[in-house]
Image (cartoon, rainbow, N blue to C red; front, side, top):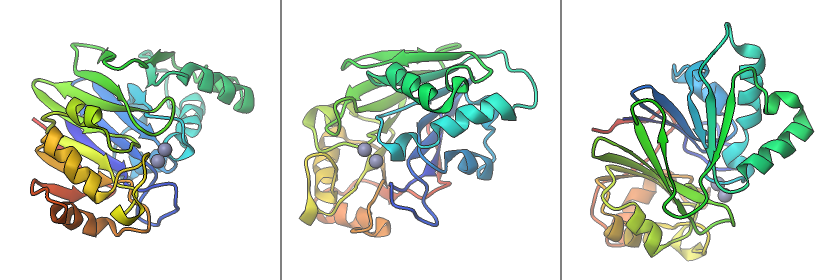
Length: 257
Ligand SMILES: [Zn+2]
Ligand SMILES: [Zn+2]
């Protein structure tokens, strides 16, 4: 699996960090994990063909995580050079189909009929999983997060390797267990420990989380301006976790397996 961070930022506009978006590629599967604003142009900047995306997987419906969903469907409707026969699958939590209907009512028919077959799969329950088509190139597992009513995290597995993405979440023992032994954990770190909250992570929360999840590498992302992203790895160490931690940046690519 090849992971590319397209957006390591938040909802706050930033010259160098887009809103949350990640691209995972393996075999015939090319999946976007979240699709925040800036994703479409970030794909172009990183040389990733948006036309060849096979799946989009949403963690929750906050605007910083889905902002480029409608523009992406609009691009499929009007920007494809030729016909495309393979379907595009939208994976998401409970309510994804309803969200899409509302977006169609607001923006037009192209949202549900973007010129390619659009399949919607809701993965709501803990332990739900989906085999992303063709030779089970990637298995996608989900787990609820501590953030919104619908929010979920993803664990992408292939050939004994795994990439975990927390989406937005507060600390949870269960979620940490779900991420057990992942090769890479893309982990949100919204706030400093002095502003710790139930629905977002802080460096101290990441240190506790990592003691349970035991990831080979943590890529810290979704850092709000109260923290300097570059300083978060050191703060996690200071909180007592000595494993590998890096600050994600837009364009970071990690080969897993
Ligand atoms: Zn959120
Ligand atoms: Zn967010």
